[in-house]
Image 1 (tube, rainbow, N blue to C red):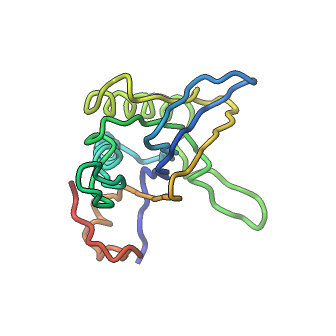
Image 2: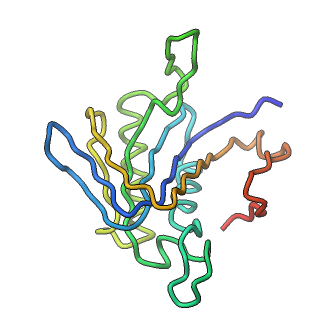
Length: 176
């Protein structure tokens, strides 16, 4: 099966995270999610909305009332999100050389990433959504909590018709 991959996010539950550019902290969060975002060259608004919805609604936090694990989302607990654009998520190995032809290019990626941030802010508390500097050489500091690291992808319509790959969590994959 040829799975057409589109927008991708590596999500880490963190106790804190920050982005440093040229020795200066440009953004930081406390408890929440650090999201590395890879934009595929064919991504559309539909993929962007899917990823934004998943980032905000993934239940990866403990319920402070009941103590039940994997029960609350970043949105439920009013936590922060630090997004970092990372085109290297769409690499292909050619021997030992990296090829990035599947990644969305320059201006289009900058606009799409900006639209993703806008979508996240629209559906959460605006001040809780932070990001690095698009295109800059960034140092991303992550204090992974758990550790919990998840990868999510949107998929093209043709790929959605095919059976989904099963995850290792044993949980079903109901959409939110």
